[in-house]
Image 1 (tube, helix red, strand yellow):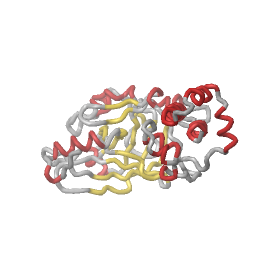
Image 2 (tube, helix red, strand yellow):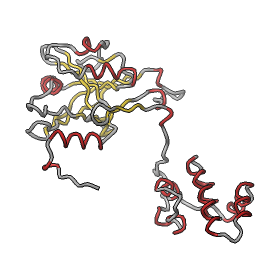
Image 3 (cartoon, helix red, strand yellow):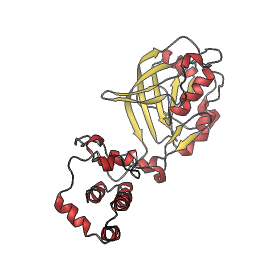
Image 4 (cartoon, helix red, strand yellow):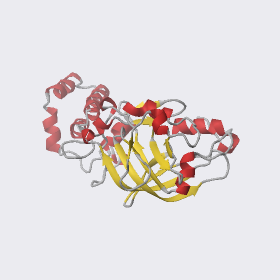
Length: 295
């Protein structure tokens, strides 16, 4: 492992390390307007949701590293503290990238990138009609993080109205993660796309208190086959299966085959049972995995 000190690195190298490491980052496609009525549309990947009550998103238009000039988005927000955060999906990612070109201030990136302006209901900046979710925001604060090029300016934007396209909703009226087709920024020119094929769920221990990895039997904790993710799954249960449940699992035909074939060979039996349990864990069946591991 290498160890780097940020102060020893050139800004461009530091930026590269950080943007490759702190990823993927969602994209804030922010529309703003100045007092003269000039509309600006620009993407920012220094962005996330920071509060639900009140609903606050934060994004950061950084000063340009080469000359420390500020971006039109920041200039506009300091004049009119409003914005629309338009969520970017795969269908609009190339146009979004085009909008990041540093056009003169009077140029409207909606027009340059081929996007459709929609009037907002609460704020002055328009919305991007192509965006699946549009957040009308009032800027509460702008917090400068430094004076040199590359320093961020945290824009604390309170969400006042949320517009969601109906085609990305599920039958309960909530956003379907499989339908929104998110994209996110990585390092350099790399992006990633969130599709149904690369989605997975991790059970959040909100209402339960897991036993923890430290409470696992040493044979399980030190297993050569079970990964850290597997141990995390096993440690997230509140209680172990009963002896009766373990006895029932012993009668499973595949488990019975392992037990019969490894009589007198405890090491091989343990390895094969751990391999079988791992298959259950990878399928999300933690209960069955535990029953096998306790045989």
